[in-house]
Length: 393
Length: 181
Image (cartoon, rainbow over all chains, first blue to last red; front, side, top):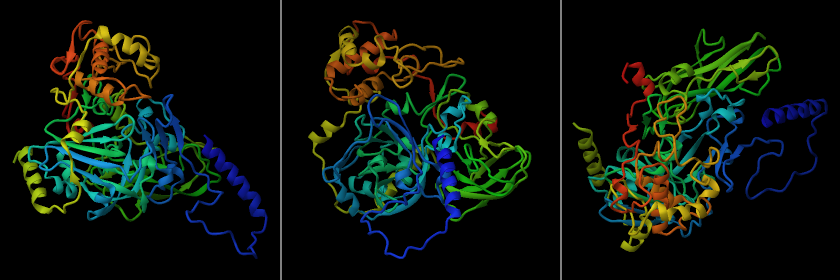
């Protein structure tokens, strides 16, 4: 609950300041900086949750309620590390590609940057985002509940272009991607995705990848579960069968009520959430408030977002901010006049395949309470007569 | 056309469309052998060596017990239990452990070899990894204490939840809406 408290303090400071006259300085300003910093008044930060005795293992969550537009600043991109953030020297780092290929090759970063490059804006969402909601443990803020979600412009090379160098053999069915973190995290990726739109990425939002996002090289699989987008990428092995690694069996599988578990459930289904007003905020007055938030789907484009301000009884179309990009976050907006009465507000999206974001009850009826991953239900926020916005429904 | 045939066409199309640029250098057999540590379900990638649960007990106590507890009971969610829960997956309180949930014994070896012990991974010898793997399987009643685990016997171990996983590309919600289980 730090962020809303800070917001309140900032608001108080602003009110005090508004009584003073803003002065235009008569002297020249500060020196320039070779690498910029945000204004000192801007304090938006990730929420960090470390999970083990060893440092750097766990997650940090993006302050979605404080983001403008669709791009997540790299410094606020969510993190999920399984053995901390490795310090990798880009001058010596290499990518080995082997297995069912004609010519096993080793690539330096310079080699990979020599290929024709490609940039693409896409979202990245952890498969475990909002896991607490399955068991009714609703986090109080949108950062806590949905913050394992970010969106960047990624730059690199189309993986299929690199594979022309090694000559992948026709009987390759899977690609095993391995990271250079201490746990050498490994996932198996079907060839269809590898050849369709997978990217080897070295750039994020106009500069090199941040260490936390896989510096100097990561895999990006647009629209797929975050964990498959292997960071600190060191090795790709082409095989006939998946590795059945721990992270694709013990974890990142959804245990269903009948005792069976869904495996290789890669695609992130259509989802939306209102980020403002959202849990932990307070409406200061009746009258106009812009409702805004994000919608996204791993199945292509968002077709529409609807908003309800009357507890789900009626729904109206929200405006989608251009550009509406395939496999990227979409910003939606909805004008609202709050009459001061208690209500619940929520958003519901539909993607280009016609998939409609489910309610919590519908999702639970299929996945049960122990699925652990791929939670994507509608999230209502309760607005109290005091103007406070809370997550408990 | 079958999915396999479509994939073959896709692979051939990719092979045909981009001419190699001559980037990268040939990988040597030695560097591939050193890097290729994945242990596959059919046993490919398992190294020479062997171990038993009897020998693994001491390795476990020295290397694993500080997090996973004396006999694999675990210590809270981040140091998960390694044993128990067999038969619990379809109940209201499922317990997912190596014994109850993991479908392949080779995954246990692979994960210990690449990622464990958590704070100094890849410090165990192949014999130690086989032995700790055997010990964790023994804790679950899956292998005998004296059963030797090696590149031949480990892939033949049948895990209780071997057939517990399904793969559908379509979302379970969409399947339910169509009335498909």
